[in-house]
Length: 243
Image (cartoon, rainbow, N blue to C red; front, side):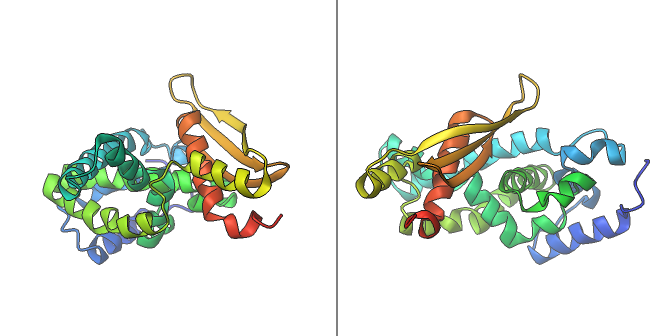
């Protein structure tokens, strides 16, 4: 495999092994975890056949299944809509990105030079995708029980934070109510960037209060990106609220 001088396979695997050991994940095949940390920007630079995008897609499905099963059993009085709202908050990009940062995934992700210089390892979208890719590899390597425990320990454990912050309430509606009640205007959203092939679009959305940028996010649909941008704005309310 052709690699750039800055890439050290031994050091890369050591970081992955340290992560798995620290998280008490009894891996079988260490090398199988590498793909979870290959961002698509680095493919050409390292001559790699595949990034973590496809496994991230599968990890997302595993995450939704585990979250759905847990919530269904944990909240027997909740109706479908309520369960969907809570699940959405659990699996939303911002929550997963925060989890990824706590786990230290940002120190392992492989990015191109340009993406690295742009701070890509702090990009919430990249962090969330890496978390979901790692979940899928855990599922493949160790089976469903191990994947379920990983989600319980690091995602379902954020439920109290979600309820305390009312993050399970639709972010766009919540943001609109707050801004209309205090600033007498309606927040608006602008599409900053649209990248990728037609079947694999990625949208970057900015949320505004008047001319003030209050939130931003990147997602695989405009709807998801707008919702997460609203949630980002809510998390930063102390910064923009007085403007």
